[in-house]
Image (cartoon, rainbow, N blue to C red):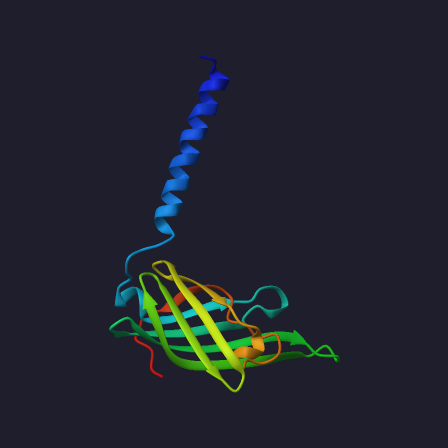
Length: 156
């Protein structure tokens, strides 16, 4: 067996092991309150450094989470000044395994936001609706990867 052939086989084994490990991490049966409770932020970069979206989460028990979204869309106005559109929502999300869904249906339409607890301290958020369906400001979205900045139980 040539060295090149051996290295190809070895690379294939590592690729399969990595894929199996990544797949095992994609879904967990449950997440604990210590992982869930806290404040999570997704920071903007570049000229909007220092601005962020924030989500507060509190485990209520019985597959329910209290959530609060404080969101922003920073932009530069016509005069070159820093401006921001904002949006907020608060309510109860249903959690199943490592994925929670916050959904409402009201005057703005149907809003659905999925929160996936990727690993301790990190959540991935996906807003399945158009921004306006959640009643947020123009271009404001909950989408993104958020990191935990505080494990203190949030107050609402």
